[in-house]
Image 1 (tube, rainbow over the protein chains, first blue to last red):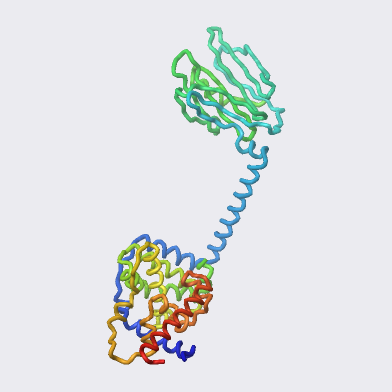
Image 2: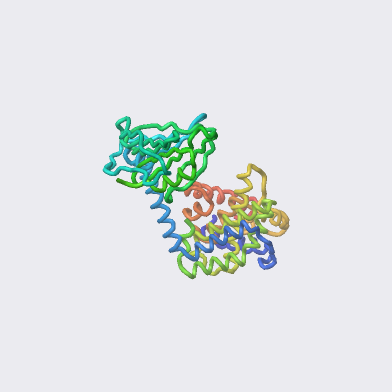
Length: 225
Length: 169
């Protein structure tokens, strides 16, 4: 008959015998790898700051919940999705395009115009939006036939703006602190183009001109009416 | 998970002392089983995570009882790692030394425990020498509680058989 008490005594004795088979811990030298040291340092530092770690863990959980919630809202709510994605630039095989899924309600009481133009340019064509989807398109001519175009497009409805050929040189620039896309015309016969999106207003702006410096200066002087 | 287990300054201090005193020995045990430095370090790290889970049950960080518990845990982790690498036929750290014990001397119940296969031996040592409950055993060894109970039964059956063969029960 083997009682629990006998087992306990025997197990303790066996443990002692096992200890006797081991080398002295102080004699077991080993230089641990930096990977091991890092992992143990993390473990020890977490052990030394359990409250901080718990707070960080809670924060991570909250972030995860928010992310999952936000993703769900994006999935089911087209309005929010449009607010987030608005105008998007896409590069296709042979051209670039800006696409908006639209259908968000913006207060379109504001209108936009270039407050500065190179000398000699006069407004020749004005289109207060062309396809009934909001925005305006201005075309300016100079006596020598030189042309500048300016347009602004709200993302209120689905539309796709086909723009520069994909072979044109593309450069990222800034317009009054906003990221802008500059497409440089490969020949003197064509006009370079600048597009930028203002996510505060939901407006996509467009200018085309032969002179790149003038192009950027016009962009920086776009005003609200 | 283990982080929330180390909450009091005493436990943190105990854990650090155990780490500094026993890490070399733990590596030695793991390396004897795994024969690979990186794997041995992984086994030591896994063992420390398990030790952290029940640090509050350890009274004295540097003592024979703690050493026995720590070595049992690291041996278990090293053998698990050896098996998870689809290698078979490993022996525990103590098997060779136990195999060399004299057959001529009269055996006691403790010697029969030492002669158990290492899976059974660690169950008996952890449960009866260190007082782990079945639930604690399951957590420490990474098995279900039902399996811990089954292993305990099988270990005791095997022990009875060894004892009968040795003529001590």
